[in-house]
Amino acid sequence: MWVGSAAVCVNDKKQILMIQGKDLVEWAVPSGGLEENESLEDCCVREVKEETGYDVQIIKNSSLRKEKQWEELIIKPTISK
Image 1: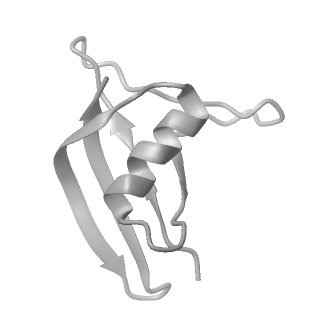
Image 2 (image 1 turned 120 degrees about the horizontal axis):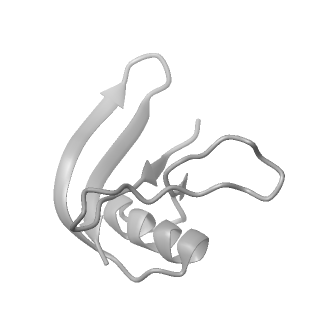
Image 3 (image 1 turned 180 degrees about the vertical axis):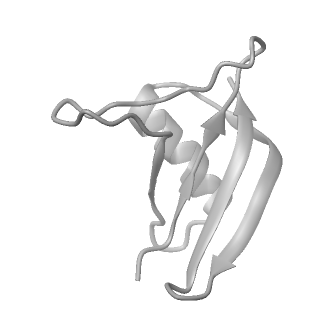
């Protein structure tokens, strides 16, 4: 079972921060798996830093839900630089 966070980073111009892996065609929001003893919020902030270099903070949790078929917890906060 995968458990992790995804960040929707929106700037003042309402632009969304997207990332693209060097071998991938698709674009995605920063995301990644939860490390041991880490909260979902801390995971989210860490993944944005690792994948973009930006220091961010969570300003609003836009959704938090549990997917029934995968028992997966997903958090998609709006964060600022």
